[in-house]
Length: 278
Length: 129
Image 1 (tube, rainbow over the protein chains, first blue to last red):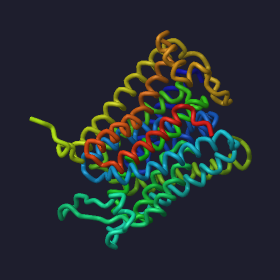
Image 2 (cartoon, chains in turn green, red):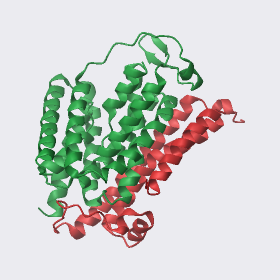
Image 3 (spheres, chains in turn brown, yellow):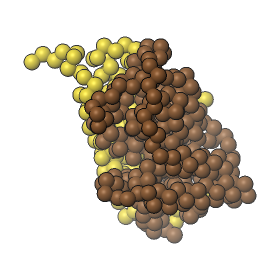
């Protein structure tokens, strides 16, 4: 395949990935690396570099829309970004030291985890346990719009959430993904932040986290313009179309199908890593 | 009308952040598209060696190298410039937040934001650990 054909095929694949990622809430970046390595036979380091770029694009695009709706808590996001950005730099440094086969296996495991984590339904609003000293000092408590008007919430478990965010950042930096599922768990499970606030704030943080590892990837020569171009443009366009279609789409069946595809890709990544074919 | 610190409400900051993010992505996509066209017109028929990792050459992974290539109107360098703009967008968002927190007189969050900004700049400067 020459460069032109490869650009067209990868661009179309990225478009579909971005579209399905936006419709199912899994994000398009997560299937890009398996697509590039398993289908196109591209080295996993180039694949991860290209996927990371698309993660920044979709996160920034989507965050722009969410921030205006008033769910995103910018203080929670900024405070936790200390953990995710440091984690991302650490993860990106690991990426150049681990063999490609190990990264492939870890990728598969995280992919499986993300598929299961995203398949859980939105949990009901957590019972408010009242103010927490550390969260109060950090001014993390806020309110968000609900059908019954503005609802106040109190943030708990700051050390646990902060630690989980460091892990999420490391995974994001190591694998070139947004690690959104893990960020949401850190916020809505450990810190008892309402689900809608967790998901939008997570999205808000993904771009900054990914930018922290992108610097390292760029310097190490992992980001190839010929590959990143169709991936970024394809995922971005696909996710924009997906976001437009989403309010009218019935996504339950699609979520199951896309979840199955993700699980299959995850098993393939683990298998290829174990047999050293990557 | 005199602008008071109170005018810097969270809503106003959020709206500026949203526009900043959108503008960054649109600009980055436009530059990447332009670079992609130049690249494909010139090198569309060459066969890329992506199966084996060799790392990008110097002129594609440093800012000065990328700028030199852009001045020479090289497609791959223009794409890389677009990607740099994309990576810079969240960084600009963090820098803007630092200013916004300063205008809100929130010293704690000016400090927190500057820590995040430092990590980002450290990474963009090479991030060798």
